[in-house]
Image (cartoon, rainbow, N blue to C red):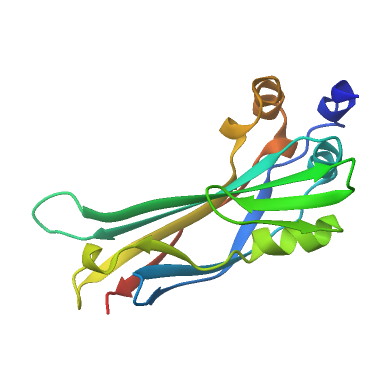
Length: 176
């Protein structure tokens, strides 16, 4: 059964994750990232989930302050990983933010909504940014192949079905 999860069809071009919306909000807790993504799982990834393989989607964000006299000042660097898997016994899809909440869904499409529109998460405390300063924000989202089980990592490196990532999205943010 596990071998069928590894044997996917012919390799295709790498899939792309589109970052459709991204902005930073200043809250009492700190600075939060609100983002949404547009992508579909290809047939190989859907098949892997249905055979019990857990997939991990990681969002990385970095805020830098430009300096004319030296390298840019890296003010904030954060990442959040979301895991999705299927439980054959309960016939439920599960999505969890590592180190936080977990939810169950009856369909894969319902579970993917939480990955495509994750909850706003605190990327930095209020003290991390200087009020009024402008920062360059770099954001990217990708399927994290390094968190797959070791036998699956070998297949993922050689199979373009397992390359799901966004391009870096860069935008300015002035701290409030």
